[in-house]
Length: 326
Image (tube, rainbow, N blue to C red):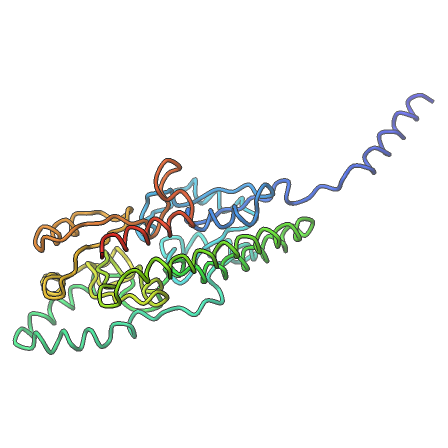
């Protein structure tokens, strides 16, 4: 009789206990540290979050390991930027996409087109170097052999905070679908963080307003600041690598043209990403005598660094840009 009572009490306790929720063990993998920061802001304590590409690593050059493949296979959700940023992960992500576990954070953002943005620039380049046309065509041919993203859509959407608001909405929707018990909390977190993004956008406009429009000229390591330039009225007058992938090659003619642009337009600084190899930038800096300024374009710093979160990354970058161009 006593045994029966114990069994009944156990069953009653089990019935009264809260139902297990996916949020107790919702495993989420984000491809980049910046994406992971946004996921953590929305998901809070209800997600077990891991980052595929470590902080300080160039996402274009990242090569996954078998351990990375295992993490993706075990994840409930995999959050990616999309637009070609994670090209090296294509085969791994294809397996996860089949059962609907991939969340494309940038879905719904109107992407900038690389080829369209620079069509006029290349035409001008050909006119100026008409006497060296054969040599230039050979350089251009060689460049296209080595590059991966010379044309297509620019994936660096997070350089405009208002685009990150789209990320937030997509991530909140995905987390809510996977863990409906905590949907209201995900939405509340999303709304709170989007308010911070609006504040950030206003702050950036205020900081940039301190620069005369004629001084808002950027030279960057590769095509990673187009969304920033469009949103805040900058002109990208040159890039070290004329592509939105750091894996592309640059010809001698393009490098010479860039150095000429820096000199003739009195550009005071070259901005290089913290995850970028500095060799080429140091060479151009030495040739032209302009400053070399490190920004966090595609990765966060460590917790002890100046850009441990997305909001701090943008504030650090903007302060560095404004100070360098004054």
